[in-house]
Image (cartoon, rainbow, N blue to C red; front, side):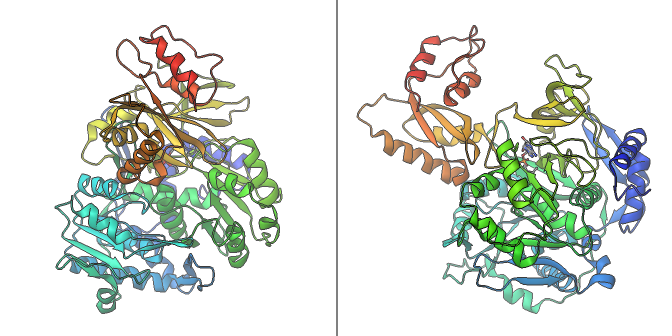
Length: 635
Ligand code: WT7
């Protein structure tokens, strides 16, 4: 029995038990058999959640791109590594073979080195979903620079905050991007951001849309001419197992984004192993994850996980609605996609459209369907199962987080019987626990609580960039010696997990993780605003949408409220990005607060969700009169 390839449900249990009984031996066997190392590790694991400190494969030397590219060259150099499907359905798809990928990553590595990027330097990548995004990411890994990919939907302010937080010296971007029938001026956003970033010496610009943009002398350089002169070889930098591979920002309960730091060896091993099993990956497959590489899903399951397995991974530049709502299904048919990994919000949006969009396409190539990012509701699950999978393709509802680096709880297709809305069972090596409010573990089945993880796994984030204390406070302080996820979950009668949603100040909108604090900070910048509170409320397509309660400095009946709403959303767009815009904004005279001054969001959530029959315990409320006022005027 090989740990690496889980074939039956019985085998899953055996492997799972082994992974708990002897985690070191378990992970050592996987690391040994399936990766190339320049030097073997001295110690598999050392950890202490109270510091917190976790180290995997200490002493080992490797380069992740050697594992993702070079080692495949001999046996599958001509196999497609990245299959690029452009925004425009009439432009040809691009098949980048492993050989070609190697060449392009090496050239990019040489360009970065020539621009002075050294091992350990931070590189910000702000690109649309084009091959250069994956190539630049891999080139950073090859030269040992730490990549910080920022989703190209973030605003200039959000970009600047991220560039400055990790002190990036170089930004890789493009002149613009295509999004359906629109183009977006990415370089303009970068220019604006860089007005606030003194540390950036160079920007490298991909020519994607051929627009006429301003290039700042000495700073901005077109990438292509540099690539044309670069040589297609680059000896990978030899990295320590625990060297940081990348920083990826996620929002949290303060205004400042958290730069989650992932390290090299453990991340690689875990991303590769989960990819192989959770997507039932086979050599001839064409695997497609619809996420953006700007999120962790794209890092682990478009780039590193698939490539470490020598897979063909699809990169899609466009949107599900362009040129029409049949685009996803057209792509599945055209490239004979075998695994489709997407988000519940996309499924719900597509399910609303005419079913002919689906039925007009041959989806028989599909073998496994995946979902990620938020709880999937029963209706969406069945629609996906019936219409896309034709009841033949198991759905893997994969629960994980930016911080976990890889999938933590998920069915293994053709092994684990699925159950709608349940992420089911922990992956080998993952030891979940449900905790009660008193910090005690809730044992047994048919229980619910706060979801924690008891034992380290290889791809756990090692710290928050520049703020280890915050890392400790956020994840390791709520429950002693446990990693706290921020999610609530229940465990059913057979031990299956269902994630019920966030129990902190994070709201998942269309699968995007949004902290309430950064949005409130942005709103409060408006000169007319005194205070604000954001909550989520149920939304058909987005899962949750945002509801803002705003107190104005002057109660101006005279002010045009609709105009104010527009201005508030404009400020949010500038500070964070359009994904954080509010669906509803209610102007209020006060916010329900506890005697200690904390906003009682629980009440605001119930009001926004029109679920006010039972407001729960309001005895600590300082100003009950305001609750009535808010309820009377709810939108
Ligand atoms: C939060 C993490 C991991 C990649 C995308 C999101 C929610 C994620 C599921 C799922 C229910 C889910 C959780 C989690 N979440 N997957 N299958 N079922 N909830 O990464 O932005 O770091 O967000 O997304 O609330 O904590 P992220």
